[in-house]
Image (cartoon, rainbow, N blue to C red; front, top):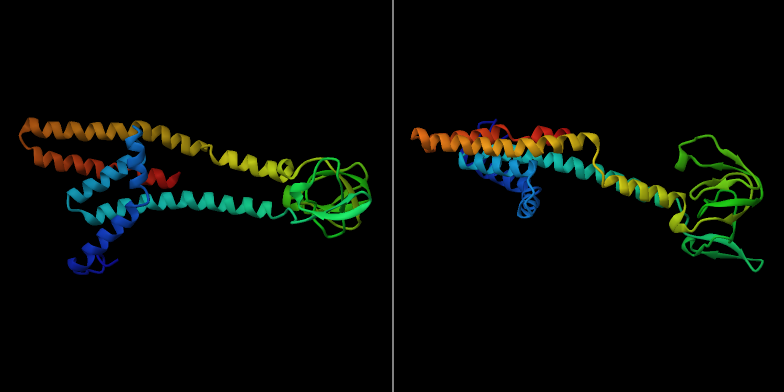
Length: 257
């Protein structure tokens, strides 16, 4: 903004350098760690392109490249954080306490202490602490948090009920069939966490492109530099090789993923 407004260089240059350092900090350290393990990717090319822009004296270009790539990193982190927030909200559906019958007496225990075979008492308006099977009582269950179904589900003796459901109309006595660590909510969380580690089709395609694009561009840049030595103008063709690196930086590809 300062540059577009025609600000003096003593103001715009420090701002550009600061923007470059801040944005580059989001991906350069991790890129260098992967590079030390022999792994190259889009981050490798972005790092070299930003360094090349600096070598050409184009600090604004370097800052823009780093900023755009930092946006893609930020978007990925935002989507992961949003999923984690959703998982935490899902786990919050489990009540902090559950009422069980032991020796004919109602006692309150944490859900983690429930074991298959326990008899759980669930009053109207309470959430089920874990999965079970209704022994006595009839009710309408709100399962919208689990299934998305907005209409309450009628349930009676023999019906399977799931953790996080809200008991609507009548008191229930439920036989526990699953521990808190293995109930329906816990399995959903486990599945989502497992899927988070897998790459989607778009990301796999981008990685496939990048695996060929990055080495190809680096080889092209080296060939341009070699050509410069052959024709006797190494400095000019070195600058042109840097221009190729900067122009070919796939920040748009990273943002699209």
